[in-house]
Length: 330
Image (cartoon, rainbow, N blue to C red; front, top):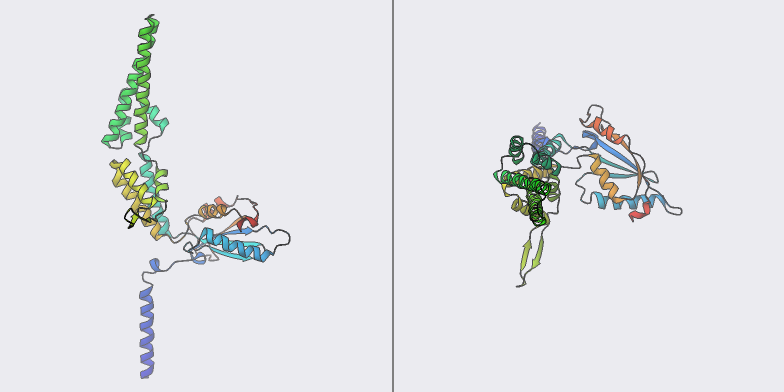
């Protein structure tokens, strides 16, 4: 009886230790396709006459793994089915990952609200004075420097319009050519001044896609030798790009920092791809297979329907076959 009590106590201690190791389970346990749902893409490899189908398929799988998920962090599984088919599966993102991505996208959307399209700027510039002043306030987003640029562009446009009107009036009155040439020169200079002022306004707007592209740059720096043969660490392309953005847009440096934080938090907690489109783009970049796509969002679990199921089915149901030679992968 004493031995039984000792073994029971030891078993309970082990169970408690194991439970502690996975607590909280939502953060320590990563659900795969079978538990949280996923997407399956079935690729059919084109085999040339005289080639070993199974060998070609296995080689293609190895090449795809190196190109698509070399570290295995994306949890993309590739399995040969039969002689000439490859099944590629990815788990759908967790709710936490989706929420973090939405938070990041919301920050980018907020940045986009401050961007100015050329067509919108031209429309605003030609509004009546009172309406234009209100539009300037809206487009400035509370930024005094951008408001000054907008007001300067408006003044330049008004001057250019006034000089063109004066030239037309003077020409109708039959003024000498010397006077007409002088006014034409002034009007041309005013047009150039407006174009420069307009470009300055557009340059004050940070395009969200430029921000996204900068965040996606490599974060690997370089170490080089200086003139004294000593090692010097150079910033990564990402660091250089983000520094440049803050220098070009100092008035929104705080907003840029918020976007960086939201992006890095999302990336740090992402356990795989967020969308089948991402997987399709990765595989398309390999350029080696023809395929058909099916959706298996429940992974065999009828009680676990992913909230993205309907959208994923709509996106994937119309995808047709694509044919590329398998030998190109090697």
